Length: 361
Image (cartoon, rainbow, N blue to C red):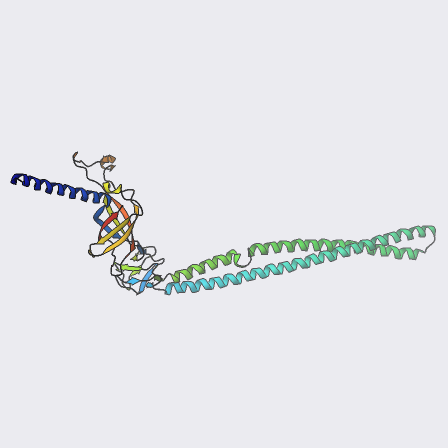
C-alpha cells in the first residue's frame, strides 16, 4: 500500500473512532443524564418555645445529635409554677362555689317537694271540709223544715245551725289554706328555677368549673412548656443560645436537622428532563466522599423555577433582560432524589455538593 493512502486511511479511521466515541458519549448523556450541580437537602425543624422567659439550663451543644424527646433547654419555671398554684386555688374555689350552688338547688328542690305535699294536704282538707259543709247544710235544711212543722225543738235547730256555720267557716279556712299552699308552691318553683339558673350545668359541664379547669390546664401546660424537647431525631445546628438568654414565645431559638429526611436535589438541564421519570434509579456521589456511590431513586421532578424576566420593574412595567439571538441557555430544573440506603461511613450534611447520574434505561 502506498504511504499516502495508508496515511489517509489511518486518519479516516481515527476520525471515525472519534465520531463514534462522541456519538456514544452523547447517547450516554441523553439516556443516562448526569449533573454535577446537586445539593444535599433535609428538613430543618425550627425549635420554637411556646412561652417566654430566661433560659436556666442548656442541655445541648452545637452540632450535637439528639433523639426525639431529648431535653434541649429549660426556661425558668418559677413564674409558671406560681401561676399553676394560683390556677389550682381558683379551681378549688370554683368547685366549692359549684357545690354550694348545688346544695342550694337540692334545698330548693326539697322545699318544692314540701310545698307540693302541703298542696295535696290542703286539697284533701278542702275536700273533707266541703263534704262536712254539705252534710251540715243538708241537716240544717232538714231541721228547719221540722222546726216549721213543730216536730223538733228550737234548741235542736239552733245546734244544727251552729254546726253549719262552723262547717262553712272551716270550708273557707280550707280554701284559704289551699290558696296559701299553692302560692308557696309557686314561690318554691321560682326559687328552684333561680337556683338551677345560678348553678348552670351540673358536674364538669358547669361553666364556672369549666373556665377554672381550662385556666388550670393552660397553667399546667405552660409549666410543661418550660422544658423544650426535640420533636425529631436530628442534629442541633448553628446553636447561639446560652444559659441566661431570653426565650421569646413563638420565636425560633435554634434549628434541628431531621436525621430521617435527607434527600438530594439534582439540577438537570432542560434537554435531559425528557428522559427522566419518577422511579428511575440514580447514583449519587458526594464531593466529600468522591469514591463512594449512594444508590437513589427519582422521587419527583420540579414544576417551576424562579424567573426574573416578566417580573414588575420600573413603573410596574415587565423587566426583560437582553439576550443574544444565537445563544439559548438551557434552564436547570430540580429533580428530587430519594436516597435508598446511605452507607454507615457517610455523614450527610445539608448544602454539601453532590453529583447525580440518572439511569433511564
